[in-house]
Image (cartoon, rainbow, N blue to C red; front, side):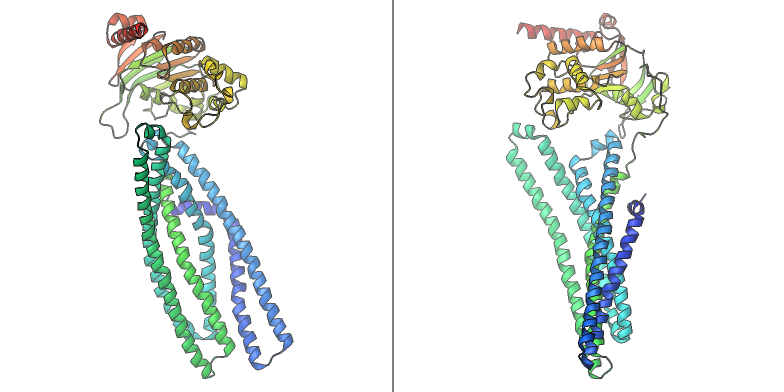
Length: 581
């Protein structure tokens, strides 16, 4: 779907309101065009004789035309601008919904600030196209055509002379409009760069201050801000040339018409009233032509923004949230992986190669390996954060692509490697895992995650508000909150992706003790760089360079004296040294 077709789709959703608005535009234009005729007839009447009753009649006709013009003008603005606001509302919701459906890989390549700029500035520019631009374009078109027809009736010669200026005006509008379109798109793109810079600096304010980069970042922002001003100045220069040139052309046309009309009146070919009416119609025709320049500007800006929005809309979701048949039977949690090989887009070699695993319902699988070996990728594929090759991953004997992703993720309680918390209370962050969770369930999840001891020191307990991304909490407190968020779901499958890395060994032992009870009856996948986190697992696999190189229980792997055994000895020695120190 092209940007224009997408825009027309939203127009179609409000065609009744827009048609009513168009009728109001016609009504407003009709009464606007009636006023010069009334004035012309009144002037002619004055040249013959001054009749009080006749003047009152013309005055009432003029007041009535103005009143109806104002009424229709009010209605057209209320209906058309109101419809544009509704369309903006729908577009913003659709844009946000689309952002929610895009693959994680898309966000790895995009800047948050630029996406925010598209969802705010660009959508506002599109609304201006839908509302004021369309309304004024239609009104201007009707008035220009109507005024020209009336001018033809008064004097064909003067009307045709007036028409000679229209091609020049159209050329100017097209020439400047194209350049305005290009400049405005570059301005919006650069504003996205500025937004991204600000968002990154605010999110990474601790890093900025830790390295004493406040002044350097402020200087860099000032440079970008100055560049943004220069980008805008180029657009201002275009509009500053466009409008005066347009006014000059129109002024020249008025001068020519006044000269010709004066000669016709002197020779008695044209009455004073007709000449006054012609001048008024010329004015009615000219100002919409000037408005067309502004409208063209809005159209160019709006379409430039629509193209930017379409660039995001044209990115297809990696996983169709409605795909698959919903399952009514309770999930058992059996996971089977058959010959799984997976590569990221653009990668020169596979991240995972020929992975084969079978986890029975209620079993715990521990996964260890070097950084970058593919552990987190494996978990992401099970959750369909990335789409695995068909027929490689099965849940309860069915390929995961046969389930709707939303249902699949309802069965899973996941704690990602990088913890993300929202700027809300701890309770609301835990409830994010299940919105209907009671306060007792929230408290129990916090207790199982080892968060209870910390909560007592918070000013408002679990209702304490935390900063953006949980900035007021320590690394361990963030991870435990994330664990509580997963546990409150009471999931059939529990996934922990190195989620105990930021807690000390004592706290880790408390959480693991609680998790041993929680894991009973549910399948658990635990990724960790600590052997202590996975040693109680029913099966442990070691992944290296995308392959499973070791597999067995804790005792089996120690007996093999491979990577796992070396890792265990090294970590045991480190713990002994810490105790001595």
